[in-house]
Length: 118
Image (cartoon, rainbow, N blue to C red; front, side, top):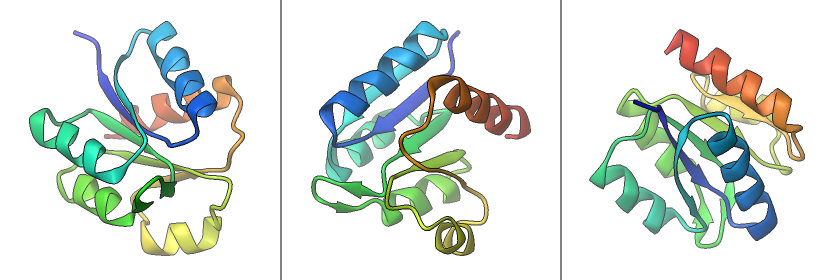
């Protein structure tokens, strides 16, 4: 059974690029979700194996969602052009922070590393 990745990203093109990248790599993709509420609802229905979250979503910052997933032992990759890596690392030491744009190979490598240590 394929591992399930939740994608929360409000930029349309980036969201579909992420989903395509993960689907082509053999993952099951949940999303893309442009907002926190829709991503939270998806997590309540079925817990993902990993989540890729943009920091700024259509309806606010994804910090609360990130913390809930981390508390539920779901590995999180925070993916944002506004990411201040030091601030993110301090707030979410368990998460991985990647700056956008992130090449697909680097993203897949990060996902593989995170899942291998989960």
